[in-house]
Image (cartoon, rainbow, N blue to C red; front, side, top):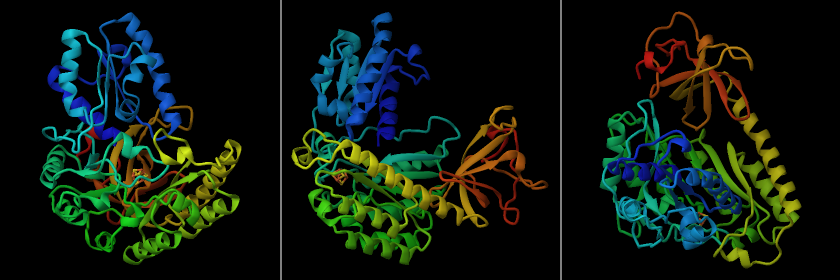
Length: 459
Ligand code: SF4
């Protein structure tokens, strides 16, 4: 979501004459778009601000802004803690950014805007791709969250749930497709409740409309709350041809007592039932999840239930985190905090277990042909680290697994086109924990992978 917001920020500043640069040393303005989901992320913000403070000393006209969830959470306190910051703008203030910057430029005032409304107003037009080879883009379809999980800061820093109008979403996707995008990932804290508050067509109906957009090849979404994952949405995996075979379904814990304290509103049995329904409709669907270890009161037995659930589901991948107290989140007040050392050990166990499962799942794909959407081409440096001076294409399977295709080992004698945006069959030859390695399938491929880079290949 912050990637999408950053694009919106850049788009909003464009009419004021600001263009993206690749180095803070060249910048007239530095915007730090922040995340408050864990304490460590907040610490990183202030440590980064400390590093850019020297630039402000050297160039007093440099504008330093802080946006996103830390800005929303800390407000004026950011100015006190980092006196060289000119601008603090919250999650609902992105649309107001041009006028805030205008005030700073004209009056050299320090500005704080962390006002939150019930809706985030739409800004005009799509955020168009930054480069001609950008194939896949994020797109926010709803803001905020009403679920109030007890560990989570999102409802306090992103506000109450609100959905964007479908015609704005569809127009934005059409714009992206017209600019070469072939895959969109629809973003919301709980996409399954899309449109309910506003009385709009539901999320599955939105997916159906997006599926009809010519030129778009793939649709992904994240995140779906398990309690709200509807039979209708599960069925969509069986019938919408552009909907990728992957769902991110955060479980957080395998212990029902912990799920209750987290206010997640499902049991592990109900969660597993949804997994079964998904696999009945779409046997090859990849399932990923989030796990929090060391939630207050989590016993060894609770943690063992989480490990059991991970094995039972057999996830394709996991994002696992140690519990972290967050301002305003009710769990901050919970007693029975788990010791840091125990959290470290539990996290390690989860990561090791998942790595074994992921590797086994990836290895099971060796010898299979997977459809891959090609995203990029990278020239490997010659010499050292096994580099050959040739390049490799990289893309993803429908199940969201990264596939590398080394150019110098492509089959001889094939001709045709490959490039960012190509959807090609790839024979998987090797599997690693975090990626696959394959070659365009000779039987179906019309193309050789050339060594010259994307500019010499048509998409
Ligand atoms: S559903 Fe997700 S975003 Fe909403 S409160 Fe729970 S964890 Fe936070």
